[in-house]
Length: 311
Image (cartoon, rainbow, N blue to C red):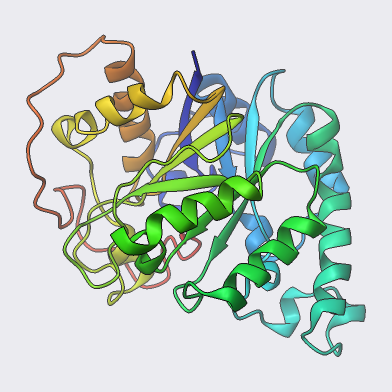
């Protein structure tokens, strides 16, 4: 049976820092991570998407967390085909053409930076999140395969942001493609019925790991600001809808990571704790119902710029 780990996407989000979730004495960089790791056994490290980390940074992450803790680390934007500002690149690479040679060098530095997590056993997976512009087809598959070939022997998870990858006529091919790559298919929870809605499918494409990311159920997905897109407070009933899917994964995979990406104060941390309680049956399981989306009563809209790291 799978080991189920529940946590959040990041531990330094501005809204979380100002929510009061971190107690006094645990609000510096070291204290925050140590406190987080005392509450949850897994976290998604989002900052490497925006800038390459250093080995010193990941060694500190290792030193500040207990054995068995997991970091799922988002791939740098250039590696997944996202727009990348020149200033996000190391200074000696900023004038280089945006080609495979550059991606190969960026991968080398990214992998070197993550080596402390890998050697300490704290690396859960690399998370390669591909943009909506990556549509299914031979060229897209070749792009993903090239990334996987560079990252051979590394744990590798893929989240597609174009729903066509999981449409009924394509889903079987997508699952087979990721299985062939030994890549984890990332499942998502989000508002349904929107043009960019990803279906809540949970295919198992590697026996090593399954990943589910909860993005919230805002109706602003694909149209609003980052704050609007991820602002949602999950109800117990909404989370309970996932219990059968999660339990169906347990015989087929060794580890399941459930990560909450819904920003708004400590909404992600609260949802993660509620999900843990549901899975351990310490709270009553409500009758599942169809969720209506929106902000979920979490809190009023954020000021511009808050939580800008969510993806």
